[in-house]
Length: 400
Ligand SMILES: Cc1cc2nc3c(=O)[nH]c(=O)nc-3n(C[C@H](O)[C@H](O)[C@H](O)COP(=O)(O)OP(=O)(O)OC[C@H]3O[C@@H](n4cnc5c(N)ncnc54)[C@H](O)[C@@H]3O)c2cc1C
Image (cartoon, rainbow, N blue to C red; front, side, top):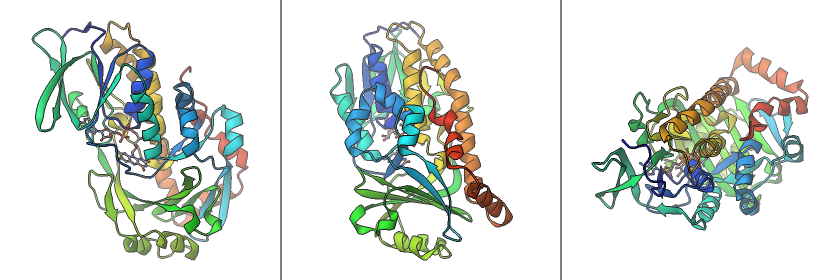
C-alpha cells in the first residue's frame, strides 16, 4: 500500500458526529482535503444535553466554534450536589466565572443538536471539506494502482474512492473499528440513561440556574439548562437490563417513576412533567485497546466510549480531533507513523478519564455506610477544593 498517496487525495472521516466534524475543521487547517461520510440521511435533532468543559472549549475556541456556539450555550454558576435519599444539599462546585478565570475557557452546557449544527455549518462554509450524507463507510484497502481505496455504501450501491487515510469517528457502535485488528466491541455496562428536555417555563423556579447532581442507591439524576437557558435537560441514570444500538428509543415514564419511588417528592414531580422520554444503553470500549492500523485511526467513542459519569465523552472526542490534526500535517509522508503518534499521545489520557468515569459510577450509586461516608466527605469539602480536583481534566490544552 502506498503511504505517499497524492496529497490531493482526501482524508476520509467516517461519521459527522461531534468528533468527526471537529476533526474535519482541525485537519483542514493543517492543509488536508477532507471528505466526511455520514451514515444518516439527514442530520436530525436527536439526543439531549452535552457538557463542554474548558478543555473541550479550548479546542473549539481555536477552531472558531465557540463564538458561533455562544448563542445556544448556557454557563451554570455552580454544580449543586444533593442526596437523593434525604433531598439535602451536600456540596456545591463553583463553575461559571470561577472556572473561566481558572482555566481561561468557559464551562458550557449545550444541546448536542445545537453543537452538531454549529459545527456542520462551519464545515459547510470551509473550502476543502465535503460532507456526504447517507454514506456508510465499509472498508479501506489497497487498489491495483497502489493507492488506498475506501469503500462505502450509498443508496444500496457500493462506491469506491481513493484517499490518504480513514478516520473512524463513527461512534460507540463503530463499524470502522473492525478495520483495526484486536479491536473490542462496545460492552454494555448494565446502566441505562433516560433523557428528556422541557421548556423552562414549564418547570418550577427551584430547578432553574445551577446544574444539579442527585445521588441515590443504584441511580442518580443530573439536570442543567441548555439552549441559552430556554430548556431544562434531565438525565436519570439507572441500572436496567436493556440493550439496543439506538439513540432514540422511546422510554416509559412510569417505569422511571417506579425506580425513583423512594426519591424526594419534588424530584418525582419533576420527572412526571415531561411526557416523552428517550433512553439509551450505556457502553464502554476499553481505551487501552488498539486505535490504529496502517492508514486507519479511530477517535472519540469509536476508540474509547466511556460512561457519562465525568461528562467527558464529547470533550474527549474533541480533544482527540485536535491532537490528530497536530500529528497529521498536510505534508506528512508517513501517515501510519503519524496515526501511531496520535494514538500514543491520547491513549493514556482517554484511559485515565474512562477510569474516573467508571469509578464515579460506583461512588454515585453507593448505598448504606459507603453512601453515608461519601455524603459526609462532600458535606465537609471546601467548594473550591472540589473544583480544583478537576484541574487535570479541565486545565488540558492541545499545547501540553
Ligand atoms: C444521534 C446521536 C445523539 C446523541 N445524543 C447524545 C446526548 O444527548 N447526550 C450525550 O451525552 N451524548 C449523546 N450522543 C453521544 C455523543 O455525541 C458522543 O458520546 C460524543 O459526542 C462522542 O462523539 P463521537 O463523534 O465519537 O460520536 P457520535 O457523536 O456518536 O457520532 C458518530 C457519528 O457517526 C455516524 N456513523 C456511524 N456509523 C457510520 C459509518 N459506518 N459510516 C459513516 N457514519 C457513521 C453516526 O450516524 C454519527 O453521526 C449522541 C450520539 C448520536 C449519534
